[in-house]
Image 1 (cartoon, rainbow, N blue to C red):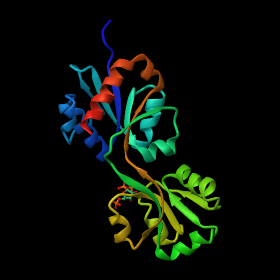
Image 2: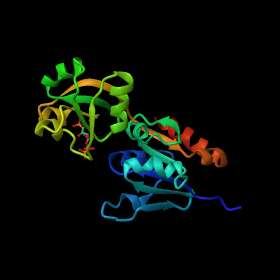
Image 3: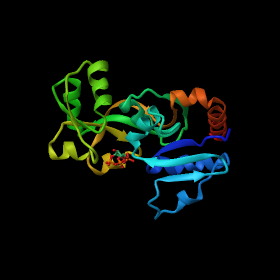
Image 4: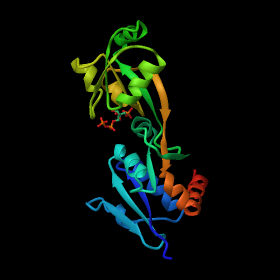
Length: 213
Ligand code: PRP
């Protein structure tokens, strides 16, 4: 029987580039993906019987859960937020950053006193878990889709729950880290059925990737 293609979903952007560098190190490359002007969404390596596609980060766990992708490379933040039925099998060690509660220094006392504050975030589930389940603090969570740092500046919320990598976005906007929620990095996730049906190939791939770290 001819070997089926393994499908890998990559979260568009910084992680995808780093992930492809990892795959190259283990002898799986995809030249056509390097063309910056391409509008192609799917890239095939016929020799290795593997194909890659680029998706919006939050959609990667969805593709993997439904088996449209056998494997996904995605940030831990997205895995926590999406909470899909997938296996998380490897920490790739790059894309390191922190999920934090941030705001102006003056918001520190609001947090400390457990006041009813508004929290703007792209990650409502993570924010809810942090405030409701861990801190037992009632807050109002406001879902945004990007440029979260704007919210406390223009008065939409008192604080934000967002990713901090270098800290420069916060610094340049007069905001600080008030609480740390958790550290984050890029992860390899696997579809639960694929893990059984393609166990040998997937395990080999994971152990090869592990050796490059
Ligand atoms: C992320 C995050 C912060 C910024 C943090 O935003 O939401 O805004 O990066 O990085 P830094 O600590 O290195 O400044 P992203 O660039 O992904 O865009 P977004 O605002 O659309 O979420």
